[in-house]
Length: 296
Image (cartoon, rainbow, N blue to C red; front, side, top):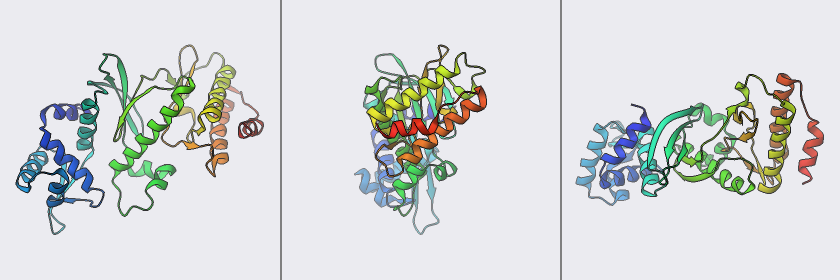
């Protein structure tokens, strides 16, 4: 059984006190790598005897890591227990009511079909940032540089929060971007994404037109949304059968007033130009277009 399905099952099976204990560990992990039981009891607002019972139960179920080599017994959330907390919150908030099949997997996220309370299908994107990915994600490094220790669960949460914020800013621009429905911890709920990665499309019927559509979206998002993607390339550009374009994966975005805005924008444009030149012999005047955007 996939981890997220096991987590969804546990959401239905766990008691309210179990969720409070998991939340207590989450709060304690701001200060401790492994949270002592007395701190968990304090954060969960549950007596120590009850906390101990719940911790043993959760540990036996395999969703907690326990360490007794620290001079005390400490507990730490793992990715599955974080899934439980996020899914519990999203269902309690009536953002989603069910999780279905895996429909996409990348280096830093998994995407599942989910269902809204209306019965409509949507996408549930679960950010899973590991140590290797973290080294490459400049924005997340900047967020946490002053913290003494860092949980990869927290880094994944930052990634999801950043993407959700970007999607909310982009949605009113009507540029065929996913509609954001909700976010909790490392999970983002959005409308289903249509299309295929442009890197895997065998042949475009009109590559120049597709390139123009991409540049048009970049311009609208830059001018009206004040957003730069900062990680744009052929792996996060989707193309439909009708050759409509959708830009996805926004956790690394920056504002257009960022001190390094020019270099981020230039890198995005370079990636697009290189891809189209290499695969289709089509390109645009990058320097001219860059100056055009910067003057908007």
